[in-house]
Image (cartoon, rainbow, N blue to C red; front, side):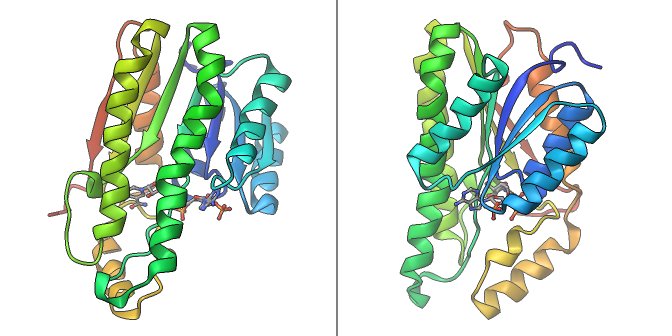
Length: 247
Ligand code: NDP
């Protein structure tokens, strides 16, 4: 068990599937206390029950990250139950790709609300606690699409570029408070993310692109790496892809 992870109180948004779920499992196996947020409460509760059943501490809190008050409740629940918050992983996200001329304005809005505002609400919820503690770690999830732009994923890429910009500003501001910041940018990882594509042509292209996707524990290990560094080492960016991914 890694000392840097054991007994740490870790809030994970989007923990009901994919990267969030895999990370909750790995961190929990290494002794962390995980506080899980997402909308699908049955899945969240089943995961929390499984983790507590194997002797870990875990809490499920129904959370829609597009509501600032719900994200605050999630973080407050962690602090009220376990006494502090050590890490937040702002992971909840959507990827409903489509060419701009399909005018899927509602999807653009939802993507911005979840992928950008949801992360900002996570930051807002933890900052007062972490500043007071003079300790903490904020991990934001960007993407290869936070580094590259291409047809059909302009809006998604814009949200993921925004996460890198926000995280760099945050990094500079929280230095006096001993808070670490990490952006993790995965390539294609096998999760439910492609299911959020509603445009049929794009869905087919995404399905093909994800044939080379790697398992979700690749992301979880990146989180463990960032967390496991000595306190005076701040891993600010991790970009990883399937070995076979070209983009
Ligand atoms: P999944 O679709 O498997 O998981 C997405 C998670 O986000 C789910 O737990 C979902 O939970 C949650 N979520 C979606 N909307 C909301 C909301 N409004 N409020 C709270 N939670 C929400 O995909 P991934 O695990 O792949 O995605 C996780 C992150 O990783 C995303 O930010 C994504 O952009 C990023 N990423 C993923 C890559 C990949 O290839 N898989 C590559 C690069 C980045 P629920 O529906 O229960 O609310």
